[in-house]
Image (cartoon, rainbow, N blue to C red):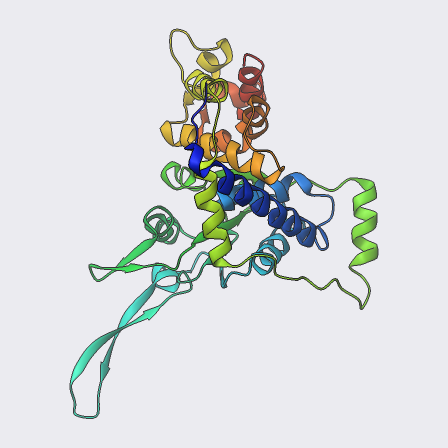
Length: 333
């Protein structure tokens, strides 16, 4: 049994699926002209965006995180902005502020000057180098798609996505993101070092005077349509059961997995389940399939759930990570 689409709309929905899948495949190919050997990272980034979510990219400097964000913005045809996060960055530098102006007749009034957050595709580079106060300025924007200045709400453009890059927390001058803000990111994507063949390709392609031209494949209207289409995709009961079992199984309790009770302090809430429901559909669409499978749940468990979990000191002492716990839970599906 699965959630279904009315029969009268099935034909048109299938055509929309095919067209969306074709455009997404072309978008992946365009991004692949510049980003080498990071197919999983590219897939997970696109999956997040077509779920109308935000992305947190984690990795050491020099792994093309910034280039990935810039390239994706061009390929999706979105207006983009960038914030370079530093310890002295203030909230007003992100969301904007009101300034007092005086006209020719001496009348004074406030005028709102928009900050860089007023864009469709916002890159927050090295977000964990910003102070907690400035990090929190993005919280309302990410969740509500609006910001409040002097008590007045200001709507952000649509679509609106934050793609933040983060350095490993072990580096100096970093401030860990609070749990509430981490939960606003649909996925935490870990960017790893390239393999030998990929690194050879990178140095050959990026140390000459020639560069690949990137062609926009989508625009804002296309992306909004695909985001709506994802929510129309049918999903089987087995997939829903796997999502519920996985997320609830990650919470400590009487019937939880031994690793969970031993190492997990707090676990994903319903937002994790919602994220998996949307992301499994989006992944299927990205792969050209008409419905998600349990394998999609397994593939997406780590990037969607690991930043929504906190492990205790015993886990750190025994080198047990959230990925370790999630792998064990996925084996039970």
